[in-house]
Length: 130
Image (cartoon, rainbow, N blue to C red; front, side):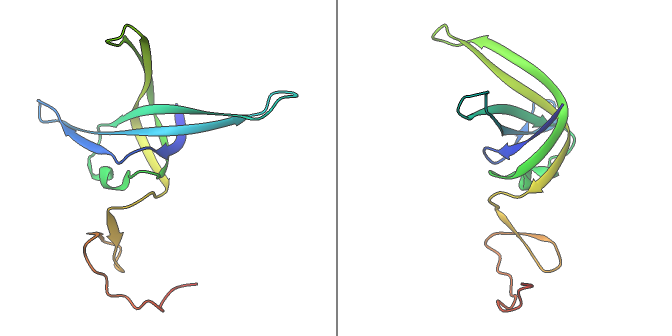
């Protein structure tokens, strides 16, 4: 399944008991439609995503980033402590393509290397390309 949406919170890397690591994040996808003769309706679908291939991408999966996810979708249903039915949609991502970045904990140097946000980049301010 192909999902295009925005990341709702920064990705988290989890270490499992068997030394495997997984990147967990959530994506919101907005849908807009207008029924005949009615007002426009906007709905949002949330997906809980996991990526098992590499943890290196976690630093780029920040809140607000626009991503394209391809993967296997599985539903999850349960009864909560209050006895109410709950459900979620889980995606085991095979491919992640980042179309636009969100907030960032890193900055990019002139050479293209990622550096922590506390690192100062000495670049002339008036050397902007526009």
